[in-house]
Length: 462
Image 1 (cartoon, rainbow, N blue to C red):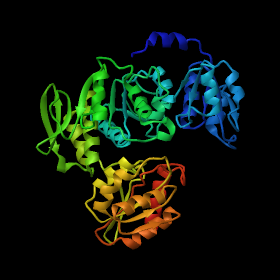
Image 2: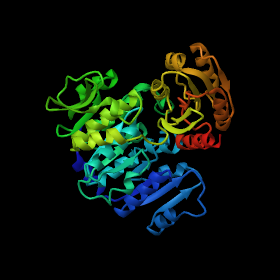
Image 3: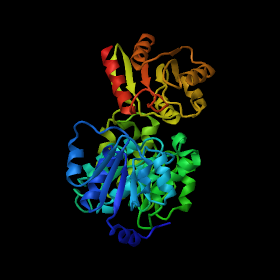
Image 4: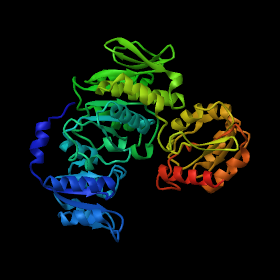
């Protein structure tokens, strides 16, 4: 259902008091943006006030008030016009729950940014492949001299950009289910949904609720907009009938559509108005793995809809080597290839990484226990993994999965550094050592990026 933007704009003229819950990059950027536009902002942060913070001091000079050291429930008694919540804070957190009980609207930062942006947003979401696809789209538009900004869940906070962008300068935006759950009027001109796999069930409660959060991306789109959807996954494809925008498909299995990207006779092929155009052989792609072929097709689909040239799309396909922590080749040592796939935070992402290799994989895995089954990995472990080095909260569950799959060598360790040394001892020339955890990182690390960086450091110490 499309929401009335006139109602929103009238409501925003109130310029009332706003509470930002969570002082991180997104909270600071949202506070600064709202203050610039005349709102009275209070920022609440669970942690203690930092000793030195130039951004905080600048915000205080601009009139922003700070409440550090917890989330006092008394903040729910103020009649805030709205609240901006850090995406990672659950709605069950007592302060957020109390604010909801008081019927105060709660948004995430991407919603706030969209209110003040003159630029078109091209949004990309999905369980796996978001960052790679978002980066590919940015590269394709840049190669077409469209000067895109790339932001969102990928790391750059979009609220910090919107007042600096030229009108009609495109923003390629990676968005997560956490961010989308806090949207109301958010309206991308192009939106891509890559796939659905069970993820973040500890946050959303059910797989159905997780999917519903992703579908919110399309709720304000109309006939003049474009939805890019995965034709090969029924969970995604079946939702097309409920959407208002034009559908552009990407697929490795189908080519019977008027707009999109596919594979025909071994060539990456764009389709527009029913006419196919072969761009390049799949074999000339720089990225490795079937999942990256899907990511590339999705990116080509978005880029074509945005107006990128065929030459730019093909050039990026041939030259783009990937992004950090996504099947990243770290080192070749004594004929052994070490890959960092720390971004594989669920079993399906790990499965895609394993598919990229034929056999002789020494697999490092494990992490935060989110109650997700590892059984779907069994066939891939049986066919490809010669040894498994397991750590984190899930190491016992993963060991049971490995034993069920017949992995001949399973070792449990206490640290990533120990895991790397154990993997090196079991690998020989021609083998692959693959960090692809199938789990989130937060039991042992602050982020998957930190986990991946520590893996790379350990590999370079060998």
